[in-house]
Image 1 (cartoon, rainbow, N blue to C red):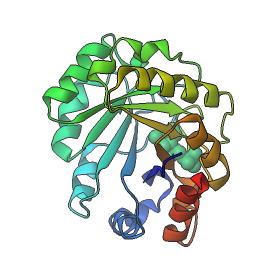
Image 2: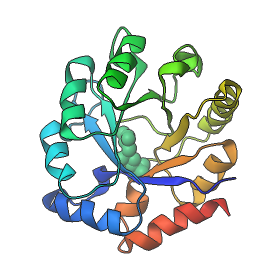
Image 3: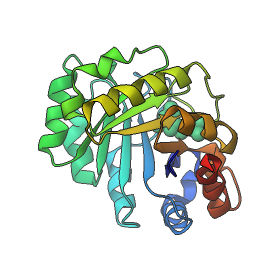
Image 4: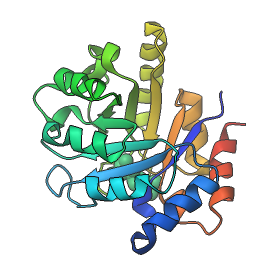
Length: 219
Ligand code: DX5
Ligand code: ZN
């Protein structure tokens, strides 16, 4: 197994000090910053929008991995691109035309991701792989940090790894939800190469040690 990229989720940070948190996580060795966008409609929680993403963009150069949990997503793709997202991921259920949404993200010059909820089958992404830079497997139901890892998603990660390898394309396989140093190992063994972690990083006092513990779970 390869050493995974670690994308700490800002959702578990101290929202009264977001700029400092972003600087601290970059200094602690985060590969990407995962930004969870929630609308209180697609998921039962509200987080923050493009104004906050744009403000944080000034604080660090690490890639911004924007996870949209909003419906419809299409009207906001340009705003997140302009705010400084490097990757923009959305759920197939968030609009009627996933293929067109991915084309839009690519046309904005950003990397495009497809997010699969725990009950969403791998087939949802099978016919758009040529437009996909990242597949995100949700290992919790989206909406909240601090939930328990859903083990049944490991076989989905393995199936997606086979699907990606068969294309010969470079597509990241990311896991989000309940990732800890303990659950990270099985994610990596199943074929994931990017791990999102909220509570397991921002919930700890030593961010660098927390990131290193998850990254080292592969060894
Ligand atoms: C959940 C979000 C996750 C969340 C993960 O809807 O997509 O990114 O922040 O938090 P933990 O790592 O605490 O499960
Ligand atoms: Zn997320």
